[in-house]
Amino acid sequence: MARRLVASILTVASAFAIPALLGCTSAATAAPSGPARPATSTGATRPAAVPAESSTGASSPTATARPATTANSTMKLVFNATFPGTKLNTKVWDTCYPWAPQPSKGCTNFNNRAYQWYTRSQVQVYGGALHLVARPWRTNGLSKSGGTKIYTCRSGMVTTHPGFNYEYGKISVVARMPKGNGLWSALWIAASNYQWPPEADMLEYWGAPMSLTGTFFHAVGAALKNHPKTANLAVGWHTYTLLWTSAKMTWYIDGHRVWTVAGHVPHQKMYFTANVADYAPVTAHSGRCNGTMLIRSVKIWK
Image (cartoon, rainbow, N blue to C red; front, side, top):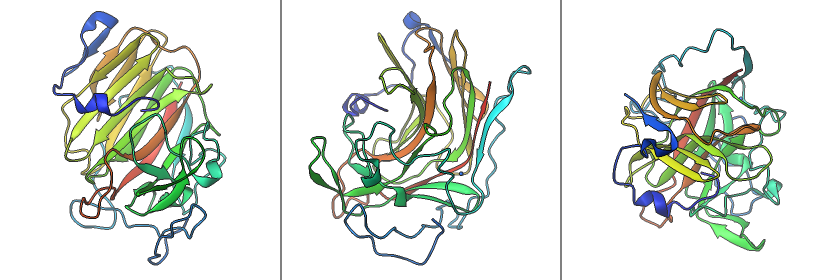
């Protein structure tokens, strides 16, 4: 998701992986408060935490994720992030891309055709989960040239770049995707040296009208994609796993292998990112940019 246009994704019509030419196969941590009206500046009042959405209307999800794929017996748990209390552990997590020019003001990925501005206020911890909250609030951000730009979507993202980078291992994320129209949510790993590619997308999830689920791999000389069939990932908790060895990368959803890539494997440190983007402009009647990604845990074994 790092440095590419969504336009190419909009042309996806099939649910099949790229052929095996390149070695890929497909298989079957701010306390919440009362409501606050958002201001338009990036240094504005933090919006209040928004109760988690659920298919039943409850304030917190109760569905249980399937267990992650069992780690190899020689692997040891080296990173175990959960989200108790109401504060984000900033020794581990940051709320902007590490390469953002002015992260204190927020950020976005100027290389994607997306319409959100990420701010710290939209990253909230409560109820045992991390909440990445997207709302259709006008927000002052920056343009690619450094000037002021108004964004119609304010959203949240996190990365482990300040606290944990790794080479090879198994990463497993227990999360629930938002169901908002126009939202483009992702769980992915990117190069710690800021060079792109490589990038491995554990999951990209588009709300209506696209309504697509994808796993992607970007390497020098390769851009591969897969569109697995899954359950409704906006309902209940689900487990997303990427097993990365020196020889191949394998994707799992709820313990089921959905894709393997055996070529162009990166041999360098990478970091984890989760974000909720908006792939279409917000208009007065579009109902877009309105949803929350919940993350219960992020674990890495080596």
